[in-house]
Image 1 (tube, rainbow, N blue to C red):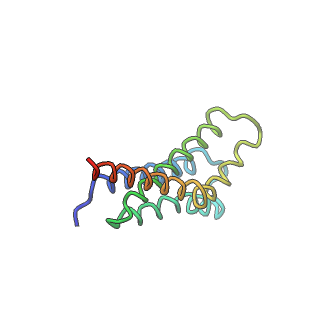
Image 2: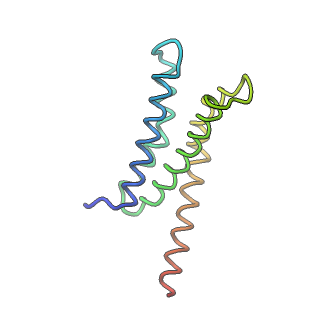
Length: 128
């Protein structure tokens, strides 16, 4: 089965998200390796694993791309707001809650939004 450009974009977004979380764990975390840190990295990478699984199927590649792209944008924003421009002493708590938000809200919303846009564009092409 040939890999489409949509699936390649989804896999690239998934890879970028995983690399962002590995970078954060390796270079930004204090205290060395711990079970908590490993668990946090695994739960942080879970939305990207789900998106990659969706992108592997022909019918789900748009969903996978939407989920991966939305999760990556949210994670990049959280990384920026914690490490580059923190607004307070509790900014780092976002790193704990963002994986759950990505799994429950951001990823599914991104998948649904891109699927709707894809369907609207496909319907528009059919009518021309």
